[in-house]
Length: 395
Image (cartoon, rainbow, N blue to C red; front, side, top):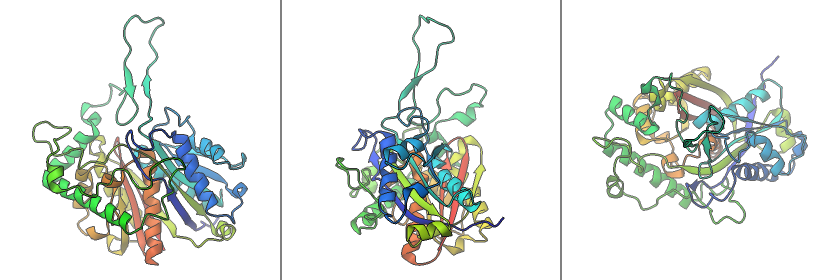
């Protein structure tokens, strides 16, 4: 059995909304359905009945996602009921995991055309409560927010593993000697690059606003922020000597993204020119409290499998969960040219809707390779509880 080439022919996303912002009134299944419909509508030559599967990442799933948000998106987008849908969860890497799984199915011949993507509404993430151990409890019951981070943690887990995500970023800052000023400067650059990309119209083709929602661009990009403004923010996780703040961390967000993946037969069916070809991927594990360094080994393995190196890269989209985390990864990649990293801004500015971010990054890499005409690109994310995921694309 031969392995088939897999191509990305289109990629779309919503503008990313801030927590409690313009997209807070939109259900996650509607966000997902919107990008699926937009993707299909942009390829009128494609018979939707030919779509073999829809794979979506979703890091929560506890609320209106309704367990299998991919299938919900298929139905809400008006696709034929014969089109299936499956939802995957690798936490912050879920959207990229969806791309990897859909690509794998195509490469093995189990599919010819697939949609991969991701969605998250952190604004609408529900509160949950455990069932009582016995009937008719007289005392109060604890509720847990499903928005982000550990909940209902197993007491068998060592305490060092279950620290807050921001404390994990502080540990990376300690490990690599990353100062508050370095983190703030990295965050400022993220906002400046994202603002410039919007001003140049670089996001216009990929961003598909929702009808009836007053949001045309990413809601968290701060065009006028400064080192002075960032410097006034207090540490969020360590009161004494802390360096991680709300300004040098990614915000909480809402949004969705989707990509159209095909083999050679699917390419002919769409009548489209591919943006990029999927080469290799990798996932790795690391100590949970050092989750932010998860991409280090994942990227190395994916590049090795593609017989490529950092010197070959045209663009590298690295998710910015925290400035300290991104800078920690960069410190462990001394041969990587930092100018190819997140040239249009990263998650600190654009936002990090957990299940959608990986799909957004994959689409961003594919689009930038298409604009360049040729090259090699990487999308990578750190993952809470200690994992990393990476994808290599070529054109």
